[in-house]
Image (tube, rainbow, N blue to C red):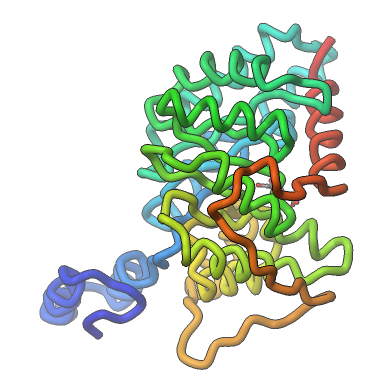
Length: 320
Ligand code: G3P
């Protein structure tokens, strides 16, 4: 099956070797190895979570994990932090940072070249300078850290300053093509790929077809310089995942339970004739020039604001 499913050139030889060994290996082992080697999508697989034990489990299940994304809600859900809170202990801000650092340090060596995304704590009043100060500290937590900023004006100012400093970044809570265009424009010239996190499931929640955003941003970025990559986030179902593979999202961040389901179904990839199932109102493609400056795009989105409020609320729950 040379070349199947995006396999690279060494795989046909590996498969030939496995065919030769078939008589010697238990059939289950052949299927297992074939699954691990052949069913690796071109889309990088990131674990959407805040628990290193879960990352280890998924890495063992898939045989690899390309990266991980964390955020304040996921960190608040870390079993160790939940245990602390259940025992009545609340964290001071330095303790909270310290716990987050330990989580990131534990995840960092478990993942591949898509790195571990670490989110700054911000609300609607946090300035770019305040975000940048946190970013400088967090960036030192792991050699493969990506700093996550919210897709707000202050977040984009911080993102712009960060790429000038050579930091790897991920702009989160993106819900529109205008926001994605603004991220592209604010980070032009970045020496490393910039992740643009598009929240599919939360658009579905308000009756839109969230997967259209992935499709539209991929189409828009096709005329760009390649520095900004689509990271499909807020994925809740197997259909979401397969559709992101189909649309060619460069990265997808996925909760462990969806990855469990994917593996249970045999780690399928979208084959010939695959079509994404439309759910909700279509999101039309907008013709936007990527040459514009980022301030000219309309980056306001109610879900960005709500998303930030949710992160702040979850983060505050852990604090004394
Ligand atoms: O990576 C973003 C993700 O954690 C948000 O997912 O399901 O809360 O919309 P969800």
